[in-house]
Image (cartoon, rainbow, N blue to C red):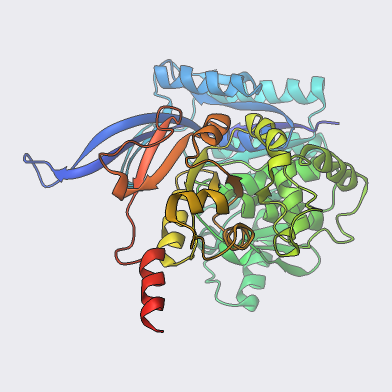
Length: 506
């Protein structure tokens, strides 16, 4: 059964301007950005709602937009996700909150905010409160999330009225807080401040477990919370119920923490709506955050991704093996079967990487699975015969361009045709194992032809990556991929150079 969750808060449209910078303006000492594309995504309370949709919840959203183009686009994106938007209050005299970020060379160089942070008017407060009351009455909402970005929607008066409404209806209400005065959140089920926010609210610096406990206790006291929770970034999440417990994170790589807080509160709301206990819910939320920080930009984590993450990190212990998680695991087993390969006829040394190596017999199923994903796919190819620092740097830079990095690997026969009978130095199965062992690599596929053209036609990547040495040269598959990116090599690092050096040591 899908939980029904109401999200109330500041609705924000995130606008990204992507480009390249190769010169300084002659008019002023500023960078000149040549724009290559523009994208829009959901921010603020909208990103919480987006995360809940990824968890397959039914989502209702309340907030405020203007009568401008940004408001129309934001509402359209919400409706495209099948989020109920009847609770959005349209204000004629203020703009929709919009954050424009200028990105050059994968770095944010400027942000421009268009907003009005004055408190919502009485008419808007009444609209949101009335809508929430009727929604609870008619739809039996399982949980309410307040996402406060201090853009004017969650005034102290409205916040307290919503908390009173939730408690009267025996509904859990979770709040992502902002500011120093937490009295407006008094009576909530829990808050999700980070360490900095918790310090501002309590005037206690968190430097060890003792100060963490004091902070959690003070938050629980001043806000009359059912549970006191503090997010600890790379250290996990601390939860005070009867005792203080720290749920450590096991994220191996952090590419971007944008929106991780939205993911945490969405996952908590989802689990608590399913009547899971607080510890289960925090474990699940912590895993969800670990999934999204491995992605670029405000991202979401699906149930399948979270449970897979828990399983791979041996976190599916007795606290998780109940009917819900067992059914989810069964769903995952079915959905992931094209990618989780049974390599009975392959050498033992690559069986440990069965989740990454796509054998020829499973390629068709893999391509079908890719078609159902919304991930940005990066493709590159090569021999990767003698793996070295240059390769690792190149592949990490490639992975940072999107979500899934797929490597087309020349087979042994293909390399012999290109480089002569003495190559490769390492067999294709050894090269598969070494590439699959890299954290940045998601999938490896062998191709027998001299070029990966046929493979590129099947995968249809969003981004095709090659080295800068291909500048002004024809790039196979460039007419198929949406974008081609050339990446610098580390000077002096090459397989050929290593092989020649070894020869001189004889």
